[in-house]
Image (cartoon, rainbow over all chains, first blue to last red):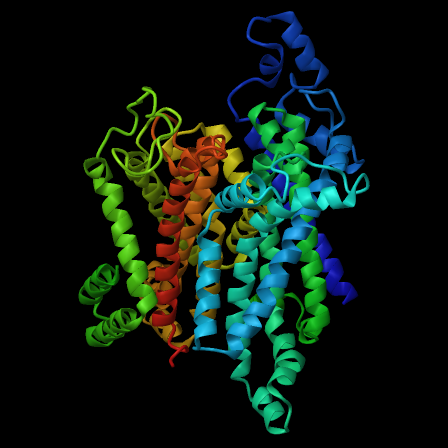
Length: 323
Length: 305
């Protein structure tokens, strides 16, 4: 396990380097000079050059990249061209909101997805199965931001159960915090829950066909016991992988959901930075998003190793193949 | 859909005549038969055909101009019914006509972006899987890097670089979806690469590219088609997200995502501009998801019940 983890950890480094390099190159291709955008079109000449020098934007970008990389290793992601604030500080301030949103939608998705999958698989071919499967299909077909719109219309504007926009910190008022995050989390988590349901259902059906399941039934275990003790444990292995990959989708979805509900999280920060060409901010947030995604998938690999003992022996390739 | 995929199969079979033609035909005939027996695939197929029809003939079908503003009192944000079947938006533009016009962009982005990802991804996957070695290593690390970006974020970044035009949306979403097809093809190549019949073809002196096209590709076509259908569904959603954020097909051309975004602001008094375009998106995505699911069941020989 230790060696397996080390290999996994080391393999994340080139991916992070690649992502940061690609981002760096990509954002420098975005048309529009960030300094000119900040100062406005009427200011020209030496003032622009001066500020460009201040942010190191006058040097060739490969040099800028290496310099950025050295600083990033020390936890310094530079300062925002727009606000002059430290990017690292801003990210630390905003990331809890995005993480809370992502975790809530992850929890919501698993809470609705897993039990419904068990229900559908046990009632395979029956009416309940058809109903649950159809709802899941609608769930993955619905744009998250449209669902958000409909929920705001129903729960916020008509029933007035939840606030429409804004954010309150968890430690200020946990209840207000949750009421602000519930609708965003549900609109973000529904498609995830539907995906989990579909995967778990087909994975369970596959497991139901295995010999050991028949043996367990034959020795007198009840259907429920067999499902939860033997079935689900085996069926969840591919589901864990899907969850890891879906986290990337949730993080990307957070960019839009935070925009709709005006949550001051990392997604909104990134979106604003892209529209104002705030290079250091884009660079920093994309790195953090990717880092979170890679760490989550590393965690998935660890859980994987715990659930499926074969992986420790066979190492990386077996895990990939099963996925 | 299925009849189209038979065509190239049969043609290459005639030209090269390595495998008996009949066997490959009955394989595809079986698939067509099973596809038609799948209710999901049929419903999905009908929705997709309908969507394609509206995408092509939408401008002809539209009762009104999608951009003509009606600013007279009572015509702005007019409720559904009467002169405007689905109501009007804040500029008094006919929502039904805008939805019909917007279908074209949505359909094009879905089909063409996935077309790019499918073709380029399959070629790269074949190369990586068949050649192996350094090329494989480099290509797959590149794909890992692309895959590590949250998709919407990558699409947003590419769109900011390229600028908001329809072609750029297609390109951006195509790039985002590339890794899925490369991985799928590569995995499938690796699983058949060392089988006896490939070795036999190699021993006969069949060039590598021909082995790839004639002997490996038909094996992996089924999962690729299924994946393509499901990815088109996802691509339509991504396009809607981008245009919701104002990074899609630029206004005044109507796009479903953009209609939703502007409709959101008037939701408290008149919700229809924010409801109908979403319904259109969902129906289009549902069609491709149903088709993909149905095809998967029809094409997978292990699922038979």
